[in-house]
Length: 103
Length: 103
Image (cartoon, rainbow over all chains, first blue to last red; front, side):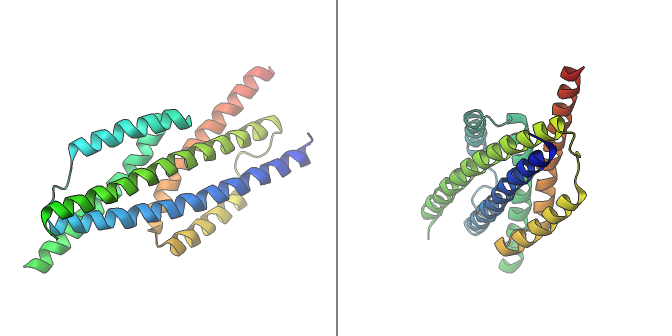
């Protein structure tokens, strides 16, 4: 394979990455739509903000999924922490809005 | 809706999240399989490690995708930075391995 063919292979792989990124964006958008509903439920029904048993089950499950997919587990934990921190921030905001509107 | 019904709704949403997380894990695994191939190509054919034009095109595209999906753009940029940092680290490791084996 010469350099020009290598560049063509590179372009081919980049198109795959663009498709995967679009899938990731829409999956993440749907995940936040779902966690938004959870935030509303927790605020309106005074359900516990954090469920340690649920978190531990998720952690074990993601570890197994990472192994099944041959995805680096430490990397996945770092990425999921970014997502979950965002979810927690939004849940706190929903709860604050709910308290403010209930006064 | 009483608290027991709210708990049932919560469980329903959590199953959706679990399904989405599995999809995210396998999408990410495929993305890294793809960037691994790119790392090998770049190392073997001495292609530039960074392509600023490609990066800018990706940034603009992701911004548009975030808008289309109603996903927070600042959050998406933060998440993509974690992914891209990992890709860069792995590409550097591939390039170092290639140089070591070419000596």
